[in-house]
Image (cartoon, rainbow, N blue to C red; front, side):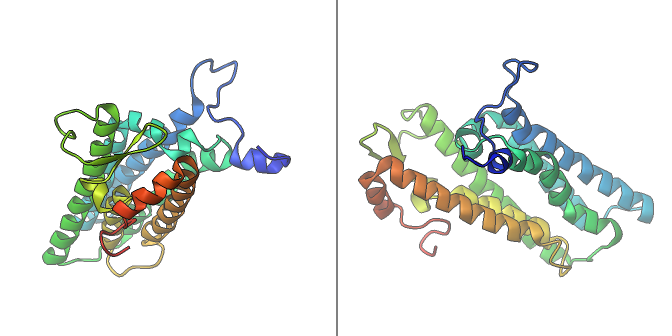
Length: 257
């Protein structure tokens, strides 16, 4: 909280926003994924339908954008419970910024690639499409594999799928993974997430900066989140975090960055 009412309105004061009218219904948790992501998927389908109406066909680029973006939406909704451990839920208040981002920013800006493709077909060659599909799949494998591994380890460190992983103890009693996906980089899931976003933009070819907005915006967002998380973990774990970073030196790209 802050003495400034404007700041509190924008950032939010309530961590788990509820009212007398909604009872135990958590508005922030609901808004975090469902309205914005479903709206994004519906807009994508509408863009594909409009392209078909105008041109009598749906381009290969449009098929790829709609399929992979809507797969991303489905994946997020299927694993919705995992959002409970994210920074948005555990740390940030529910204010105008989060509400606007969830309900408006996500559906209307994340669908810009499909919107562009309604009237324009970049006519990408088959090899280029294949390369972008490969990048998209690689990103998804990294993103889903890393998140699934962390979730399985957090649920049961002795489970069959994660018991072989190396970890280091902390004074707080928690365990930090230093092998598997999370031994490669501290934010390896962000890397996979960004690879997918870059592929979505590239399906539009050499278009304009607006079609690459998502990749640019998301790179800035993920770097900021990584910095916030590093600051929080340094305060939370102290010397243990310094030791952890000696084991896992990279942030996004193993051995590079």
